[in-house]
Image 1: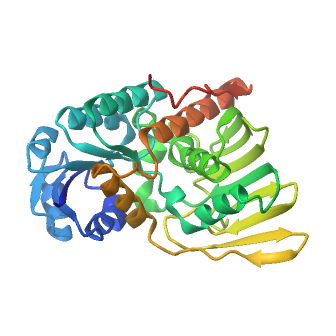
Image 2 (image 1 turned 60 degrees about the vertical axis):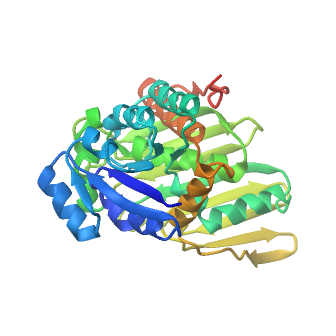
Length: 338
């Protein structure tokens, strides 16, 4: 039986990654796309070989689909997600799930009560590089993890700038765009949850309207691990990376905070240096494979709704800290929807 997908949002990320990832599944089909601009919907459908183009959410949800992928602007996610859940459709939602973690909880709770599979599109935990790091840490290859550093400041290409740097009401800014990813990747690789965050933000010349285009965060995790992260839209020549330092060794991952299955991971300890091997499967293809399996009742999405709540709450805490100048505690019961 095939899984028939409807796209809520005629987005760049769907065109570049998600449509191919759905079609890479033996049981995956993209059958409909919705854009509030009917002309854009028709053009997008034609360019991407999608049979049905519609301009309203009701029209999309009334087509013969099993699941939706939501990649509209952030302020629309809650209403669209709740409508899809009410219509009995499984949901893969872009991060952040909503503008507030309270709204994200509402959506994820509704999906759970309705028996709907709900995933957050945190692609980085599907990278072979990050999975290799997670496995090395779990196997004790660096001893007890002590500290981590994430380098995820990039240059936001012109075609993606738009609302991200001009519209606070749409959930723009680098924290809701990139810090959420770093929160999720730290949680995944370390197998640990953050409990406190301090953050500085800046406007370095790209973002307007009171939005931030750079951020630096300091994290504390339940186990006592401390971490730092740098997120940005304005650094044209910065590479990305992720380091984890333990009592018996360190991991150095280079060029891994990306949508593509690239980069390298180096393990350094008393024995010397070893480059870790890992698979180069497309991140979104892996994510969709797990999502389809979850629909069949086999496991859960690679990033669940609860994971999306954690990352959004972490970003909220970072924004609050940047405004108050004080460290902000993160609710340790975030994942509990009871």
